Image 1 (cartoon, each protein chain N blue to C red):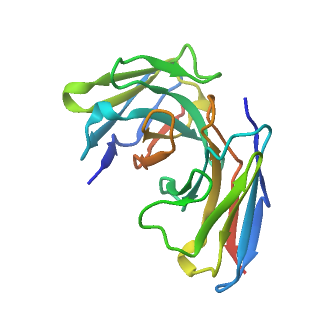
Image 2: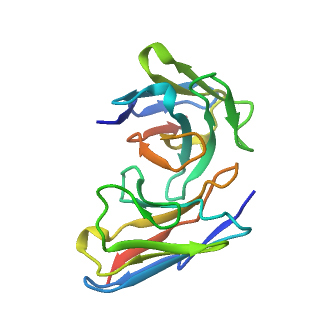
Length: 107
Length: 118
C-alpha cells in the first residue's frame, strides 16, 4: 500500500496568513492526488484533484502543486472559514490511502 | 443536484449487525462507483473499499474482509454497508463517497455514526 505522510500534523495561523501543507507519497503517484477539507462533525469536501485542479466552487485562494511523490496545498490568504482539517489522498492505486490529516487552527 | 443521503445513527450491542444505507440522487447511479470510508472517533479517514455499481462486484480493503459486506439496490439508487458481529472498535462514522471509477471522491454522504456498546 502507498503510504501518505502529511506535514505538519497541526498548524496555528492567523487570518490573512499564507499557509502550506505538504503531503509525501511513499512511491510515485503521477499526480493522482486529492485534497479534502473536513470541518468538525461534517463530511470531507473535495477541494483539489489531480494535484492542482480546483474543484468547482472552491475559492481561488486554494491551490495545489506537486508531482511524483511530493505535493503541497497552499492557502494564499487564510479566511475564518478555512480553519479545518485537511487530508491528502492518493487514488493512483488501490488500496486508496489518505494522509493522517493536518489540523489548521486559529492563532 | 448530486446528493448522497445516508441513514441515521445506530446504537448496537456487541455481536449484533448493522446495515447503513446511502441513497444517491441527481445523477445516473451506475455511472459512478461507490466507496465506503471509516472515521473512528478523533481519527483520520480510512478507505474500506468500493463497489462497482454496474456489476455489483465489491472490493474490500485489507482489514475489511469477512464481517463487512457492500451491496446495492440499483432500482432505488442505493448502496448499503452491512457489518456483522459488531465489536466496540467498529464504533465510527461511516461515509459513502462516489467516484468516477478510479478517480477522486467528489461527493460524500453526510456520514452515519455507528456506536457499539453494551
